[in-house]
Length: 465
Image (cartoon, rainbow, N blue to C red; front, side, top):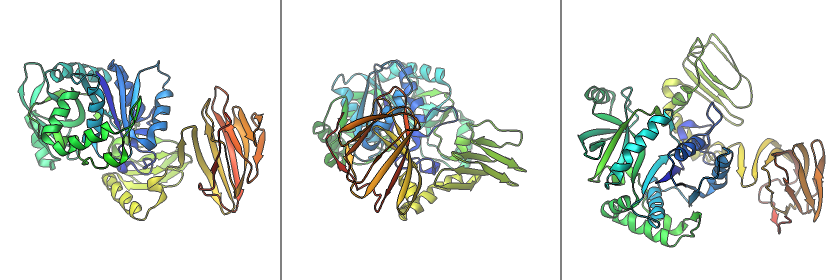
């Protein structure tokens, strides 16, 4: 079996933490792991022979770093990189084409990187039940035992049992109103649609060719004209021509041989801050705090603060999320409306929709601590064995002070080593490159000064290392 991780959802209802450049799968949970890391561990736990991740090109280096920091023994991994989002049906089609080139009868377990599953043993058991059904040519989905009449999820109605296990799917139902959802719970035949699938690569492609012939032809053309290897770079021109559609609408709701495996997985799609708050234990007043906060005469309130103290007095039923550059305050019954805030900010082309304060790069990351006319201060982290490009600036000078680790600084082809509390500078026009030759992270403060500090002021040169 190949475990396929789909990682690309924007998670707009979890703004201001989730951004276009730092989407929901990268969000750190209270235990310090991200949703993406938990999904990867879950995929490895199934004993799949390989983990294939389908994600955006801009997320590749961050995804690799997320996997590497888990410190697992070498697990075969591969990547398919999308030049733009086209929803889940095309993403799974590309993964199926990848698997089918090796064996069209091999099952694929398709996982979303932005879901949380708390009952891992039950998940492994459900996968074991799904595999023989998938090997009979069925498209298998996992149905979550509902615990309340949710109106934000799609439902699956259970049909007759199958000889190979599980049940035939009678029908898929869109998000119902509350009274309808209450009726579903009473019957005991309806499950939440978890968006987890298991099927043979060839079975999915056959269904795609039958039900969505245009999508199939465009996906196949894109695949045949893409750069392949352990990392597949999809052809941007041809991938853009693949119709954007979810796998539920395009395939699962229309296919004939669809099965459901009921499971109690402790599943959550973490679709809102209300759901995220449930991961933090409450105090005696029902308050949940992630970070540093002082709460007086406050009840049933969630506070998440990344960098500073938050004081809350005399309120109840609020969600407060404080980041370096944006603050969200909402009533808990209104957290679904965060998406409308993001829509308004997107129309205004506001930076907080696109960019996250921490900017990820192939070599590490940086965060801007202060910026004004004439200077900029950044905290830069360079991963072990990584290097920034050799380059020069024409309108600004840069000064670095090492806080932790060891830096190898090249200035006009001459190298020197810096240790904590040591500094170096590159004036405008001086070629420079920073390397981390050590086994620990290199952390330094960078001060930029000059008449223009934009990212466009860079001239790339041949690397010195």
